[in-house]
Length: 156
Image 1 (spheres, rainbow, N blue to C red):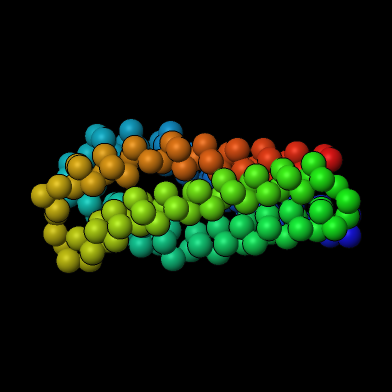
Image 2: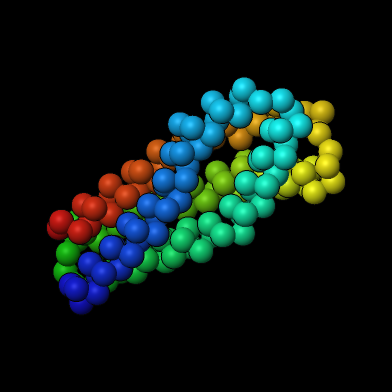
């Protein structure tokens, strides 16, 4: 059971790391870079980035959540309460990330993707991007803290 709990936590770290790295890149590189382009470029780039991100990133995101839950349960069954609690904390943070994504980011992503599909520039493109930008740092922080909690799971 101990080995299974560690394996689940390791899978959770690697899977969550994919989404964490993406969010950190967006916060540190994409956000300031897109502030320097015109609205047509902003719409085309973000529409297409979200088209592929929203299709492909759910796989590691869901795997990270499922593996975190498994690490929590398996650590508890192995009699490792600190490891179980840390995986449970990671799971809670990942679910918080999902709520932020679904409520704030996903609708903006869909708006940019639809505009890019129709070769239109939303009149509120900058406002949409501002709303998306304001949530990327909290998203990255939640992912980073979840990885840290999963690492605590691995050392306990």
